[in-house]
Length: 335
Image (cartoon, rainbow, N blue to C red; front, top):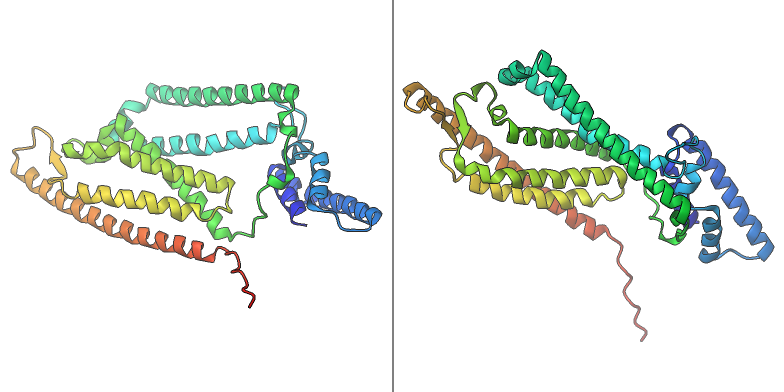
């Protein structure tokens, strides 16, 4: 019965990784045995409401899964799976990008390297660990408060099995891997883009002493960051809900479309890159700035074309998705 499959799927998500298969198999056999015994006693198949009553008596999926985790003192087994999941997501989206961006700045930016090696290195890592400990403390306190609230009100025990998500069809591994890769690179882009706000010289690297972006480009900093956060939200959501395959093309149509509009306005700014004093009057640097501006203009034009094509592809994917959705059968006319 589909309701049982949906219940087992929801329970499996929260189980310990190494025991998922065995526990689900045992739970499935036990549930189906109970239903068969009930149906034999009644002499008929159970209705959906009767099956829902059995599942409700067994308990919410997260409560059932929590029984297979070791007992915790501060956060009990009921909320511990969610607590562990949240900590992993924070580590994935904060710690790893921070370290990668820091390494990139150390390797490729000599100014940053000169300012942040030696004793200053201890300051960087101290700030990182303070951020980690602060995040860990906040998450732990919040879950400890939820644990106390759950112990008193038992709010997680009030639920309806019929509201469980539909059974997920097997997803191709390529979609999951693609989403994880996009999440990884987009998180790094967000951290790097935020770093530009504090260290503008990182934008041009070794040429930061000569060039800077044109003044008109500054207004696009926050809109581009907002688009990156929209993509990041979609990728995190698809980690938790991989069955929502429609979310990726829907999000990318919006973000790519808006980014294409921004690029079309950016390309109207001339020049895109300007010289810093005292190089503004030096002939060879003026010539170099012209070459850089030409290269930047053609690069952005290529990106605009690619983004426009991608936007059309994602729009086509949405149309195909809508077309594949089952429609209600047309009423039969009786003559």
